[in-house]
Image (tube, rainbow, N blue to C red; front, side, top):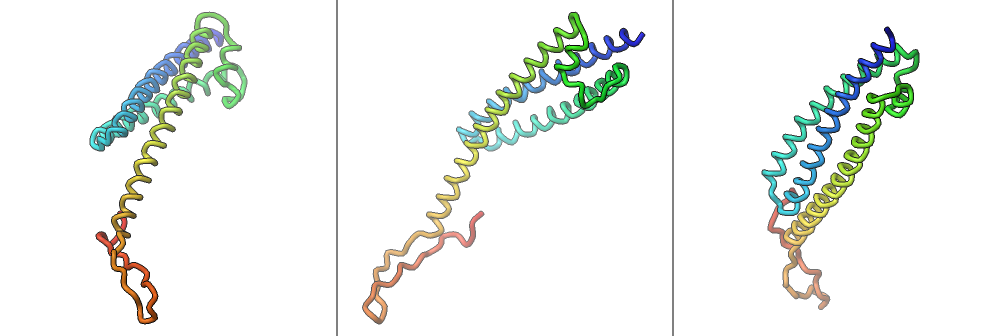
Length: 170
């Protein structure tokens, strides 16, 4: 009975992980879209992508709760601690099609998450570069020098006055 129940839980776990993998693939596609949007400076499109990402992240959270429930149930059946039940450990506990599917899903998840991480890192660098450029531009505007070459009472060249077009940085 326990083996049939464990096998059933494993099938459910594989199903949840496949759903998570599909969501991570969607997030990867969105992240790549964000790269193009950031480069083109299309803020409204970026906002839409971020809102869509939030929906997917909420769904991932729900799936992660389901995954944890299946792992807890599996750990109770197998008499192990849930923290010790990694995908690799579960794959070694089982034989057959489910274990093979679990391994394939694990590989797919790892590849997708790695690509997502790299793309997000690129996006972060692009955004930081844009912010640096904006701050540089604001700095130039707010410290525009006065071409006033005047002298003080000691016949020394006065330090140029800075005139500000803006009262503060935003």
